[in-house]
Length: 116
Image (cartoon, rainbow, N blue to C red; front, top):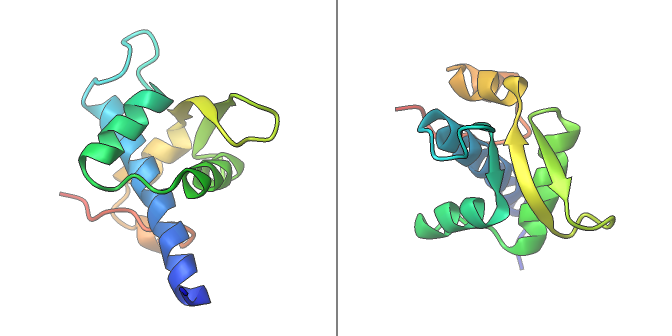
Protein backbone atom coordinates (compact mmCIF):
# COMPACT_ATOMS: atom_id res chain seq x y z
CA UNK A 1 0.00 0.00 0.00
CA UNK A 2 1.29 3.44 -0.95
CA UNK A 3 2.20 5.91 1.76
CA UNK A 4 0.53 9.30 1.97
CA UNK A 5 3.67 10.91 0.55
CA UNK A 6 3.66 8.52 -2.43
CA UNK A 7 -0.04 9.21 -3.05
CA UNK A 8 0.58 12.98 -2.99
CA UNK A 9 3.45 12.57 -5.44
CA UNK A 10 1.25 10.47 -7.76
CA UNK A 11 -1.50 13.11 -7.68
CA UNK A 12 0.94 15.97 -8.38
CA UNK A 13 2.54 13.99 -11.21
CA UNK A 14 -0.82 13.12 -12.81
CA UNK A 15 -1.89 16.78 -12.68
CA UNK A 16 1.35 17.98 -14.24
CA UNK A 17 1.34 15.28 -16.90
CA UNK A 18 -2.22 16.06 -17.98
CA UNK A 19 -1.65 19.82 -18.01
CA UNK A 20 1.59 19.52 -19.95
CA UNK A 21 -0.02 17.11 -22.43
CA UNK A 22 -2.82 19.63 -23.07
CA UNK A 23 -0.18 22.32 -23.51
CA UNK A 24 1.82 20.27 -26.02
CA UNK A 25 -1.32 19.34 -27.99
CA UNK A 26 -2.27 22.98 -28.48
CA UNK A 27 1.33 24.08 -29.03
CA UNK A 28 1.89 21.47 -31.76
CA UNK A 29 -1.47 22.18 -33.44
CA UNK A 30 -2.89 18.72 -32.77
CA UNK A 31 -6.36 19.95 -31.82
CA UNK A 32 -9.18 21.27 -33.99
CA UNK A 33 -7.96 24.59 -35.48
CA UNK A 34 -11.27 26.22 -34.50
CA UNK A 35 -10.60 25.42 -30.82
CA UNK A 36 -6.82 24.93 -30.58
CA UNK A 37 -6.70 24.81 -26.78
CA UNK A 38 -9.48 22.18 -26.46
CA UNK A 39 -8.85 18.44 -26.69
CA UNK A 40 -11.27 15.54 -26.61
CA UNK A 41 -11.09 12.85 -23.94
CA UNK A 42 -10.22 10.29 -26.60
CA UNK A 43 -7.30 12.37 -27.91
CA UNK A 44 -6.00 13.04 -24.39
CA UNK A 45 -6.20 9.41 -23.35
CA UNK A 46 -4.67 8.17 -26.62
CA UNK A 47 -1.74 10.55 -26.29
CA UNK A 48 -1.10 9.80 -22.63
CA UNK A 49 -1.58 6.07 -23.22
CA UNK A 50 0.92 6.06 -26.08
CA UNK A 51 3.56 7.48 -23.75
CA UNK A 52 2.64 5.19 -20.87
CA UNK A 53 1.56 8.15 -18.73
CA UNK A 54 -2.22 7.68 -18.66
CA UNK A 55 -3.33 7.69 -15.01
CA UNK A 56 -6.15 5.43 -13.78
CA UNK A 57 -9.63 6.88 -14.59
CA UNK A 58 -10.36 8.05 -11.04
CA UNK A 59 -6.98 9.81 -10.76
CA UNK A 60 -7.43 11.31 -14.23
CA UNK A 61 -10.78 12.87 -13.30
CA UNK A 62 -9.65 14.04 -9.85
CA UNK A 63 -6.61 15.65 -11.51
CA UNK A 64 -8.83 17.45 -14.01
CA UNK A 65 -11.09 18.63 -11.17
CA UNK A 66 -8.05 20.05 -9.33
CA UNK A 67 -6.71 21.69 -12.51
CA UNK A 68 -10.13 23.20 -13.20
CA UNK A 69 -10.52 24.51 -9.65
CA UNK A 70 -7.04 26.06 -9.92
CA UNK A 71 -7.97 27.80 -13.19
CA UNK A 72 -5.50 25.92 -15.41
CA UNK A 73 -8.15 24.13 -17.51
CA UNK A 74 -11.85 24.14 -18.20
CA UNK A 75 -13.61 20.79 -18.46
CA UNK A 76 -16.81 19.78 -20.22
CA UNK A 77 -17.98 17.08 -17.81
CA UNK A 78 -20.10 14.28 -19.25
CA UNK A 79 -22.06 13.73 -16.05
CA UNK A 80 -22.98 15.79 -13.01
CA UNK A 81 -20.85 13.55 -10.79
CA UNK A 82 -17.68 14.49 -12.74
CA UNK A 83 -16.61 10.89 -13.29
CA UNK A 84 -16.20 11.32 -17.03
CA UNK A 85 -15.57 14.20 -19.38
CA UNK A 86 -15.97 15.06 -23.05
CA UNK A 87 -13.28 17.72 -23.51
CA UNK A 88 -10.65 19.63 -21.58
CA UNK A 89 -9.29 23.02 -22.56
CA UNK A 90 -6.09 24.58 -21.30
CA UNK A 91 -6.56 28.19 -20.19
CA UNK A 92 -4.17 31.10 -20.63
CA UNK A 93 -3.20 30.64 -16.98
CA UNK A 94 -2.34 26.99 -17.73
CA UNK A 95 -0.33 27.93 -20.82
CA UNK A 96 1.59 30.58 -18.89
CA UNK A 97 2.43 28.09 -16.15
CA UNK A 98 3.70 25.53 -18.66
CA UNK A 99 5.88 28.15 -20.36
CA UNK A 100 7.35 29.46 -17.11
CA UNK A 101 10.70 27.91 -16.19
CA UNK A 102 10.00 28.65 -12.52
CA UNK A 103 6.69 26.74 -12.58
CA UNK A 104 7.78 24.32 -9.87
CA UNK A 105 8.20 27.20 -7.44
CA UNK A 106 4.98 28.93 -8.52
CA UNK A 107 2.64 25.92 -8.26
CA UNK A 108 3.66 23.14 -5.91
CA UNK A 109 0.37 21.27 -6.37
CA UNK A 110 1.63 19.66 -9.56
CA UNK A 111 4.82 18.25 -11.05
CA UNK A 112 5.41 19.47 -14.59
CA UNK A 113 7.85 17.51 -16.74
CA UNK A 114 11.20 19.28 -17.29
CA UNK A 115 11.15 21.81 -20.12
CA UNK A 116 13.20 20.91 -23.18
